[in-house]
Image (cartoon, rainbow, N blue to C red):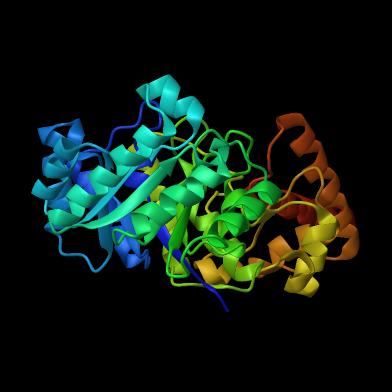
Length: 382
């Protein structure tokens, strides 16, 4: 089974989400939780942002975590000097590789851009740093130029490259085709990382497609937070790779919810109760058909056991519930009822749910049962 490695960029690209700003204490806690989750590497900031950012990064480095740390830098010697001062050894140097960004943003030709990236990478290596090369806007770059760029930097000793779908220009088929073509024309020891944005809601799908096509590293953020519509969600990528692709991933699944809750609280963001994997409603069921199936055999309505995440299925009562769900909820409280009683209670459940547009609290169901039992008692004894 192919093993997936994660380079999580919650502390860099995640914090670039509009309005998000982590305190130093929050950054330290997130870094610890990422490490505890088994994430191989974390991109922890941009030293060129200033002294405060450099001090935050240095504080993370001082934790001495077993997780590798990396900083993000432009292809500028001054950025690399600031990165080195933080004590983080991995230095990611990035430059656009599409002509539209090279010319439109930097006023450079492709040849000038390649030379600038090469000089920055060489400078980082001379400073004793481990260098990763970032190919911004790879998805809109000429493939021949991408191949030339990777091969040129590889000759100088760079083996780690980031293929960035910066503006979400790919669908999964294109990602697989491009990654396969690139890797087929560069040395076999090149480790490719795929970094996908979510403008079309395809970041996770594109990331998985790139890994399946031969990339080794997935660049992710916790709960998918990030610039614009966000990035590939770490928990989605890890779980899908394991359960849909049959691959390996060293992430501790039982820690994902805690990590996501911490990141979302610190970011002030909400990703919605129905967010895959970590949302409050991810394993919550109302439909009578689904609840009945799960009660009889869990595999009828799950691709993986939520216990893998330290979670469990939860049944709620609402408009689409069945009498089996009513009976099950009460049985969990040690209460048994007849089919006739279940049917009458179900009527009340559906009426309440439609009127309130919400679920029926369990205490209310118990109260209705007591009222039903009292009514039956009164009818029997006059």
